[in-house]
Length: 244
Image (cartoon, rainbow, N blue to C red; front, side, top):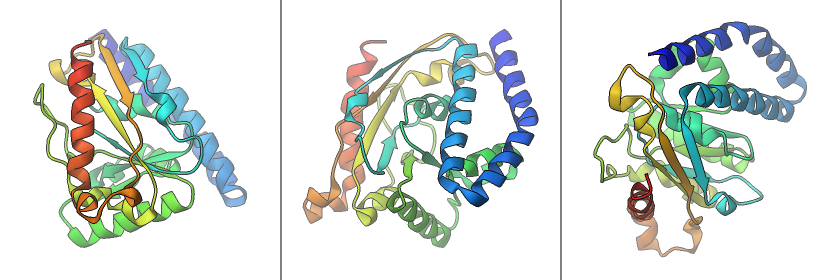
């Protein structure tokens, strides 16, 4: 319970005391949007690093050499925990936004920082708004901002299998003609979700897979791109589960 209280207290204090930073970032953004993007990324990386430290989690990152050195792309990951965002963001080398559920926009301060790091908000009940979000994500990638999605649509709980991937969520990569970087997260639910409300020490493995280039695939493979990426992540997941 002590870890939960420490992480919760830090998050609340960070959001409250970061209000002046939000104001400064807003001013910076009016004159230099790129500087705002990079400074917001650095601030959130620091805050997420503190959260991981307080949680006691040990995280092994592998395959970081597979992250393209230039350009923007689409990260595609399985989803096990709220900590998935906290953990993966630590290894993103350049500004990257997440696709988050629309409900998150209701939380003041938190949503401000999410917007600052280019998060997109998905209304899962409105197909038209979902298509609009895909277009917005495509434009972000074309402008040099990477996007990370969790195409299972919700946190998976089965110990061995990933949930089916929503094919439409990967259309950003096809439309932007950018690489897909698969991410496999293994055992992150052991930090919190497996024993709510307690936060406990856990060993987490996060692997970045070999990039997939949709424009090199056949029309049939692009049609079922989600299934192809899921299969790739599933293989990494089974391999890494044996190491936990």
